[in-house]
Amino acid sequence: MTETDYLVLGSGIAGLSFALRAAPHGRVTIVTKRAAEESNTQYAQGGVAAVLSTEDSLGAHIADTLNVGEGLCHEEIVRLACAEGPRLVRELAERFGVGFDRADDGDFALAREGGHSARRVVHARDTTGREIERALLVAVRADERITILTDHMAIDLLTMQKFGGGEGCFGAYVLDQRTMEVKTLVARAVVLATGGAGKVYLYTTNPDVATGDGVAMAYRAGARVANLEFFQFHPTCLYESRAKSFLISEALRGEGGVLVTRSGETFMERYHPMKSLAPRDVVARAIDDVLKKSGDDSVFLDMTHLDGAFLVDRFPAIYQRCLQFGIDMRTQPIPVVPAAHYSCGGVVTDECGRTDLRNLYAIGEVAMTGLHGACRLASNSLLEGLVFGARAAEDARRAVAVQPPVLPTWYSGGATDSAEAVVVTQNWDEIRRLMWNYVGIVRTDKRLERARRRIELIREEIREYYWNFKVTGDLLELRNLALVGHLIIESARRRHESRGLHYTLDYPHKDEHWAKDTILRRGDGPAPA
Ligand code: SIN
Image (tube, rainbow, N blue to C red):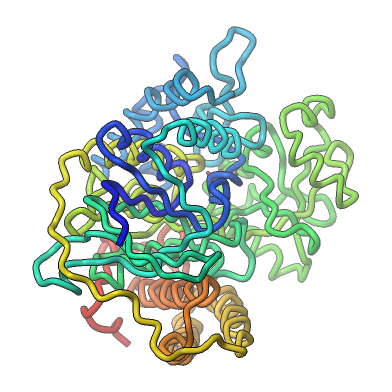
């Protein structure tokens, strides 16, 4: 058994922000599945939304967030996140040396993205997340009170409910993926900062690590999860089979990029007055509609009317990546399709990142704070990680450790290494395909019911496999993905309306009766038929 004060699962913006603030108050151990950089934060292109210009206002940021969230945002959380953002963004630049782009007068250069009524997105060219991750990791690595365990994956949370009687979380079983040893890590406070679950869908902008681990672990431990039907599809992922999951940032549309069909016709004016800069759910559905009607494989993002030198300077990574595939964005429209991008739902938390379980926190994409409601405003995600990483660290200082009971060491049974790895790949592919086809941008009762039946069979097979063979990282991720898929389906089945990111042909309108969160807790029973 290894003891620490704060056990942080995940190494994106939320986990690292927490760790740096918690370190003065105790030992911090960060557990991360691959290299420390490998997180959704690393791939975030757009930036952080915060009011940093005199031409903008806090009221406008709040109003835009509420507007895009379609009636399900928790207003007090929105106010708090928008208000605390500017100070924390400045701190990123001044204390941690994040190299945000600057205007000629030295102020932050601000970009515009979908759903925003003003320019308010601070950025570092088109690789903002990578720059933030770099700077925070430099600080974390320089702090000897913080230990990073790379290639380690949490299996399950240790709770008093499960092991001692009483309440509270006191650690996690963690798999060292290099030695395949299972370690018991005990802590005063445990922090889920595990990011999203994009890999539950066949096409996603997310990296391989985004397998919904935190939501799955929290649900298994008895915490409430909510609003998982609101999975955000980013409208513009590069359509090129050799480019794995490459995002084409919304900031391109913020600079004047226009969505067009194969024949060069604009179409967004038929769907929303904000045209190509409409909220993401609207743009993704519009593209889906155009593709279904035309039979085309992709639509196109046209930047060719903008200055070529400006494009190369402002979007160097996107320019280079497109060029690798023979697309020169200065002269050719970029082929794009929607792809799964962000989970607006997650583990239910309060304004300090506290979950239902004492001493268990959830911060960043894994959490459902109420900031995003039924659809997230662009670039409010890094903001959420920053704000709630800081707030949770402040709160966790006061966490009083529960006395851990005598624990059984991890039991791997008589299980031998499996030569049946094909079960994992087969189920992994099947889940992602069925989620894409049946639980995607446009849903129906019938498709959801098909998905429900299939995922139950797959989960049964995974359960059997899980208990019969030694755990591996792949198996743990599959088990989590299958559970998260099940929770998304159950949440979608419960919402009998269309709102924000949840659109179903059977209930195509918004209905005030459903203006509430969809909450699931283990043991609360299946969704109604
Ligand atoms: C983007 O750059 O388009 C992504 C920003 C976000 O997801 O908020």
